[in-house]
Image (cartoon, helix red, strand yellow):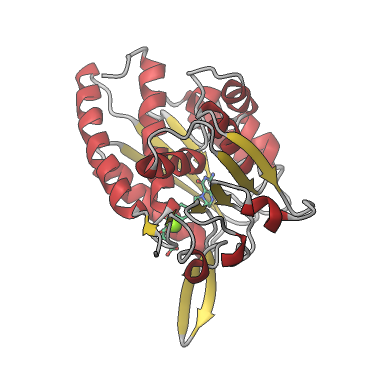
Length: 291
Ligand SMILES: Nc1nc(=O)c2c([nH]1)NC[C@@H]1CN(c3ccc(C(=O)N[C@@H](CCC(=O)O)C(=O)O)cc3)C=[N+]21
Ligand SMILES: [Mg+2]
């Protein structure tokens, strides 16, 4: 039996429609949530994501502020921009697009973002709130999207053995926290893990955030397992390019119970949760409870 394909694109569109109504209701407070995106340099992939974010922000009824800076911008200039956005009343969410050029101290910059406006959830305060189960946490968007897609297939993840492959601060670590919150037994594997294939064969849930194209193979997967593919790689293909993930999709779909495609899986969910986090930040800043 071939796996169910989990449709992230349609799920994200549904979330966006719901969000639009919530933003309208929030409008009764006299405010419109605003998201500021800071983009450094001219990486074409980053420009594509930033454009998609800006378009959907406006579609959801929120305000979008874009700040584009040259590749050679200084740390000081970026710190000053973040400080300005921290103090701008109309800005509820601040996203500094990663990766940043090597001369920029990304950790220092992310720590300069007001935690109340940190819609990526990358600030140490938000990482700490997530780790300690504080509901005020602004939580990283890709992990939130992964959990949502898993729960579309299995409403209750209690007791499942989840293997996260990847230990980044952006995906692997926060995902581990969220899975614990769903009562999963969590294993986090990484590039120095001895036998990741063997761990994978024991897992009910596999989330691949390895950065390695098609690393997760069909014979790593327990029959019926849920597989979430966080990777996005552009591979040259006859006269153009093709987008693939961290999972060898055609192999894995023959064994998995359900699998996310790339594109059309986790990517659109990341944007949906970014906008969701922007509304959450706006509500918290205004002292308005969820409506
Ligand atoms: N501070 C920060 N926060 C981020 O959340 C962040 C970031 N920096 N830097 C770059 C990555 C990447 N990212 C994506 C978002 C949406 C899609 C997306 O919607 N992808 C579509 C299209 C894929 C394609 O064709 O490229 C899909 O998967 O179907 C992809 C990637 C957010 N990121
Ligand atoms: Mg995707």
